[in-house]
Length: 203
Image (cartoon, rainbow, N blue to C red; front, top):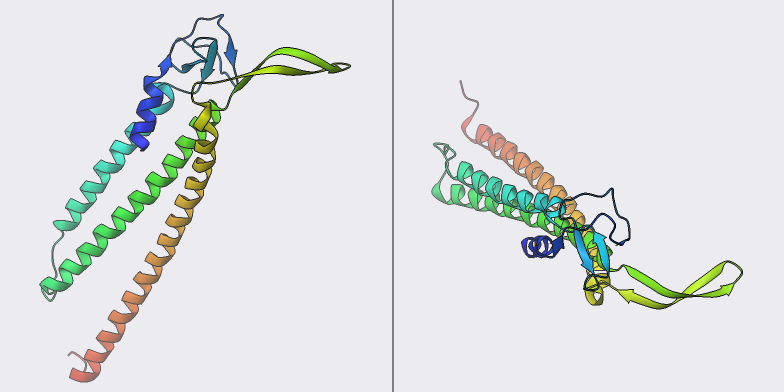
């Protein structure tokens, strides 16, 4: 979903003329394809294109490379002489599971950020035919929406929810991982102390 969203935003991007009407929060003009056409060429919105979304694809590729490199490094890690095959397999499965959960949490959070940005850009409305209400106050009688306004707001809200869920998931994972490390060390110390009591101190 993350790659598809970034690819979609890159695909719909276009360049814009210097004088050509811009809507929303538009940065300084650039010839780079950071704009998307508003309502079939009526104007331009910024926020799309590879200058805004290429970093997302690069981060996704980097995360995948680091993930597989970490799994390979763990698989090639030397085994202690006293370790059994079952214990080594269990430990490596837990390590792979931890790396997978970290990757999933990061991807969920990143997807939320991308959807929040994309959904916010797609909610732009342009008012036409202003009608005076009172004094200097006026109200548009016609509002024109962008190309994907129908699902922009749900995407924006879901983006916030995904970010919150991803961060909460990673925080919970961190707490559980620290707790597991502490309990493992405590169990090993207890096992060592039991061996010392059973066999006597080593000389």
